[in-house]
Image (tube, rainbow, N blue to C red; front, top):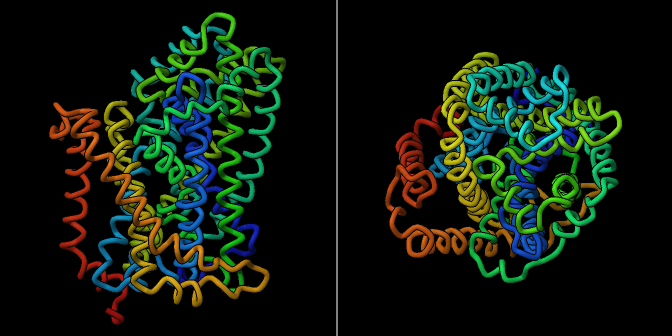
Length: 497
């Protein structure tokens, strides 16, 4: 069966695979640290509200669009955007794909972290103090092991996508139910720890003053895009393999709400753990500071605090193994979708699947090494391409608008047996609200970064968190794709171009 003819064998296989995109380390590793970093003195509830709002007005509309684009276009991101928006906009599809691929470079590093910690839970006793847990994290980061485990992660991912969608479906049919089971076991134990209730209350308590900060809204939007996979082109890629008879709206709802529920469960587990461990020693502001400073950009939060959770419970060692195995499952279910996205683009261009997989994973390993050896570089890439997800989402909305929003809904979304209608509200969100969100929040962020947050370094491209480092990297990538637009169309669409 050719790549263009491959299909998921069932709707449940499709949903589990797309949940594999959405439910990843973005839920278990990234979401709790972003919530902690954006909490006010009273709690993180205001951030959660902004995050939920963006689920409704950003992520779910885009997830619907991506399912439908993939189903209608039956190609990878570049080919589908060229078909729907027009051939002169292939560069937009390429940028969407590159953002997801750039994230893959360092996401594989995170998958490697997960594998390493799973191995440590198997062979070593659990750390029972903050100092010993921090030492494990810092010792690992200062060694060459992150590069080794990054390589292992890319190799495993390559093996999964080697034969295409059937292999991806089989793996996710096992990974996702196993992951959900492990997460629920961790949640049950976490909420029964003495003092965990204070952490959970803090997570959901709002500090309304924080909503005045543009950073909160930007972080809430980018985290929701990170969480759900909306705007990445990943769901579009899997959508190309769905059966024509299956609808997209119910699938999108399951994907969005199911994903965000897992994020909340992970945050409850982490916040409950940290407050239970430190509640008798530190005040709430001091605990929050610890959570925010667990590694650069709080990257060590999950890895420093979760081992201590399991050290405090009966059967802690096997449960710790299960948790980090589950975290590894989450990482790989998302990583394989990123590999497939890029692989499918090269397959559309005429490269044999196996050759494409080898090329994609080899280059991704090399370009991920800087993030594996330097957490500042890692933080820069997370910053630059996390924010770029807003641009990707805007490009997807543009493509639908170029086709005609109502016409696209009629032709590609509504009418599937047993599915819901997207309705005029979806038209409104895609036509106006998603482009406006991208323009307003990005413009707001650029302006305040240059005038308030970093007036002395916003123009320095070597500052890892400056406006200029974002602009420069985006411009370089966009320029390359604009120049290569005709070539990409010719290679992808062939005689149709």
